[in-house]
Image (cartoon, rainbow over all chains, first blue to last red; front, side, top):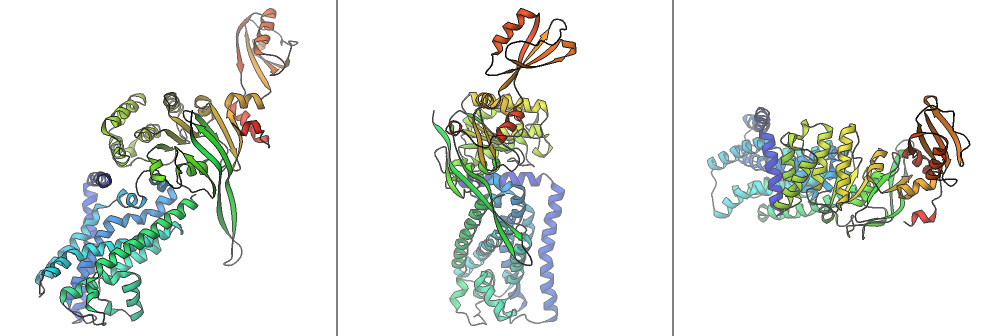
Length: 265
Length: 329
């Protein structure tokens, strides 16, 4: 079965990476510290101000947590797309094209980096802590939302990643450009969009659907209406946005690979 | 026999943009492969040769589905490579001399195991082919070694095994012997020759003409994106090489053996102990020449030296037009 193939590929990656234990542990710790440093920034800001864009600290931390776990998962599963320029340059992408599997899935699983779990664990710890200590009126749908929001966020980030990295098929060293979009959108989504100027907000919410990663789900969890006046149902729409984002990403990727097959070198 | 590869006016051009003044770019079209047509029958071993940039790799990439042709088309194993890349991948094996399909951080055996999973090869047929390759290519000593620690020769043997695990009908090799030492080259050639004997079709590009001499019944010469010649090596040789040389070792030194019928030139070595008799292919035969010789002197040994294959290809390059008889093969 197809899934079995990818499990085998992932399994081989895990074994290979765990065989360098010290290096793995250091990388893993570095990822945790990286995620935690963003937390420190938020804590410092709230040491000075009572609220940020109309949101209290625990509310911002929920957004940070959802975005952090979502981004971490996306980074784990599709972050390897950053290697695309290298794969193209060295011709290694040709090797992938000679296998009876999807190119995207091969790039994603081919060099998965387990150390990125560090980031996910750090963000997850913050999210669980803040959700359990905040005064949230828990209902069934909200529990489901809290559990799925990071996953849906990961899918949205993943789609953004795929679209951004597809640029590399045209621009030989498009990595910097792609990183601006991918890592940049992580930073944006960790804060309530109310802190941004209106044009950026719109861009974030609807062009790059970053606002659907953490901002809208957090509003629903907190029972807060959108201070910007968006209808309440929008807060529950992230899964739909994720599906649409995946569809767009799939099309862009296919188009990009076609372009490669039409260019080559 | 049935056709395994059919290339039909396969053409591939690339657009390259140059700077032409400030912010202005001019696009030029470079034709890498220009309307190449040929057919490879099941079971053949074809050498695809030409200088750098002749269009060899581009042709290979179009035949394997990595590149889409600009125009024209191909059928490989009954499939259109541009449309059915994944289905085709399961039926062909490809070895690139300069890029690896193995995982650098995994032992060779685990790389094979992973490829078995990727190509969905049933366990028993996988084991059968692996055992065979391990034995013939002598992989046992380094099966457990991570790929990054293998020598080039060892890695290439691993690459060839990797390409054969799913029992492909066609094996495409792009410069398979590049960088290998003589012994590794010979071992690989012997293995490939045997593989071809047992029915696997081979298509290989190479710079090493010994590969062709040793492996390929048929030679295709490409330059500037066009097939210059296509046919059995011996036939191409007969066509462009009009002279042959009989090398004669005598039992004792002798002055140059001039005056033999059909001989155009005589060169001597070792004070006349060895003599090179250059004769016209159409003027006489080696057999007639030898019988004329033994009447005159005591002959120790004779051999017919064919011109070097490099020389053959150089002459083919010089020939600008391709006779119809050759393109229709």
